[in-house]
Length: 424
Image (cartoon, rainbow, N blue to C red; front, side):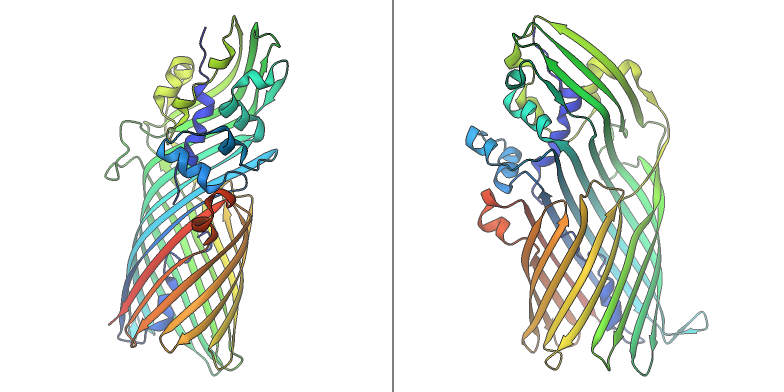
């Protein structure tokens, strides 16, 4: 008898993407650089993948469908609780600053268009072993995969906001507040509160127990043009530059809001115990079927579809808060920044604590060293290059995880980001 426990184990499809955690992909900082009667437009791409226990080479090989050798499986450094996350953001924006708007001096309007992808999970080392080594290594033992969480959401955002620049004898402050209309494209969420699998020592039987819940947006509509949910968020940004003492403080909060998924959202409560006999242990799990990017109705239909109901579901979005402090030295040629970036309503293990040292190599060229710890992975280091073209253009390219491209078998995160803006 061949049993494939795909319903709960296909969560590992999320590790099949290799796409920074503290990056300003909204490009709010461009608002600091324009003067009244000027406009600024630009775009940004941000992609990140990281894990506390799965190395880059393993994740990329799984994504390509390559053979996963025993050596590669053993190269991962797993703990009792492990985390993995993937983030991708694409943005375009336009802003203009007026002398006076609505009777208020130095008030501007900003509009932004975004595409967001967020996928993450928390899992145990025993669940990993069960998937990649089969359950024969747990003969006579109980595998515990309780507190497993999988979350995947893709949504688009139209953001409209107002910003104001305020000059003072000491410096300059930029305030921004924006309201976003959210279009939900797809959503999957799985929470296993209690989960266990016991295999009898000789393979005569196994006991499978799971308690949890699963949500999925309309599986028949997954394209970017599909409209499966609607919501709204608030967004805030403040930047203060002290020109006398040469420092700046930056605070941003994004996606403070929610989304409501439509009545075709599938909701599956699970509270089940199975007892199987006459097992073929090496076929408990079919690893080929695990290489999938998301959960869907097909993986649930065989056992749990009779429990499913369809209704609206309201949920919060991953919220991002960033606070940083920067100090200028050597006649503004050197800038040192310390900051913390927290991602709420996610499976991120810790906030990202980061530091960045930027040096003006040439008059219009800056190079930065970026060091960070936390988020979905541990230690991260990367480089950022920024170039300015006269006073009207700016381009940026960087990574927070440079070693991930150099030695993927020994590193656990990778990222790349780039952006530009033009002032006219």
